[in-house]
Length: 97
Image 1 (cartoon, rainbow, N blue to C red):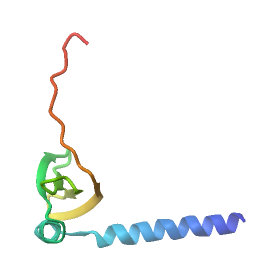
Image 2: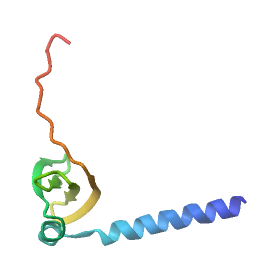
Image 3: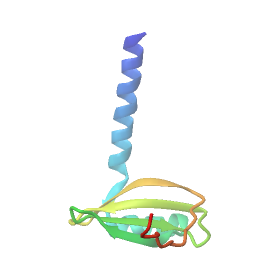
Image 4: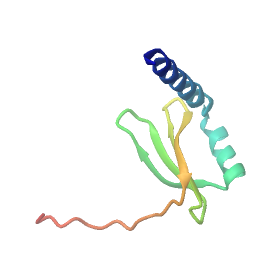
């Protein structure tokens, strides 16, 4: 039984790694693919501590969304995707709390 569980875990890790590698490409290619296939465009961006760029892309209606991270060298990887994106209004925090 333990051998079966270990083999299953190894296969899941291998397939996750292979899938992750397949979801990386030059930024322009990733942006173009998401625009043409899902009609997604960037709605939020941020710079990471190591100089990477994190972007949230979504459709105008929020039906689908994707989060990508781009390295300073221009390689973009899709790290998460889903449905039902909703933007939120920023709320100022009370300095007293």
